[in-house]
Image (cartoon, rainbow over all chains, first blue to last red; front, side):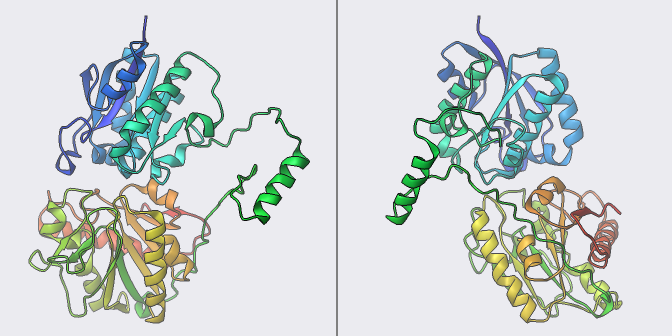
Length: 347
Length: 77
């Protein structure tokens, strides 16, 4: 008898469509679909995908409560031995959906779960609650991800002991397990020190936790005298995308003058973003970067001034290190220009 | 990016639809918006109705910028 598995995937991996289909509500299909083939192949009949749930990424993100309720109901009815989601690689909404629904299945139905994604995916934030296999940042990593996920999933189904995160390929969950090392501590420490002195690579046994939080700045005292800048990760650019900001994995940001611009019209502005359906932003970019309303507030004296430049990039699989660098750079420019506060919009 | 702007010493408000992601990236002032492809608009409405919604949301963002916060805060109204 083989284990019964339910697999969760998005509209893209189900080959329903790309961003233009990201709004679709959850759908329950018989058997395996898309990436489920690779998992099933690795299980060699020991486990079988009985149902596949397909859900649009935007639908899940925008209707989380409804999506969760209907998916949990389906999973409950089917009562599988295991629930597996993704892998989502570096797709932000997909990763968020995979991790969130897997966590809900585990906590509310008591069914074991597994998902997989790239370590910088926002969904990986739940790695302390569920097993998340670390994958490459794009779907080319499916070949390496599927066997790792399939193997760990089968171990979990069989109730076999799970090894350390580094051996099994899942993200560190912050769980410590006691065991005996072959060498005593003093020797390991000296070995590490010698390696460090010789500039050789070594692995720490106690990585320092990284908490990168920035405390909020003081609020504005007088809005009517403040200069406010607009920034976005939604990829709004002058028509034609003059600086060629990439539609995904952006390597640059744009700085554009909007002095005297009262409205972002379809003939002058568009989005360069490849991670959401661009129809609405291309028709009226104020829907992403509200220049029209900021001008109104400026004219009425609600705010002192809308800053003459806006800063923009495409937040779609963009490396965290790049995003950090862009913003650190233009934040200084904004500060030097006398800007008092920033509104950042994201899609 | 919001964190880097905050780090530079500028108060910043993040307007976005998926607020849990905004919490993850460490935004301190957050205003929830309409939908991923049109955070500050709604194509099912007339231009005027859309502008009303946008006015309300931008107004909320400005309120967030003038409100002292000690921790990550979502401005629902």
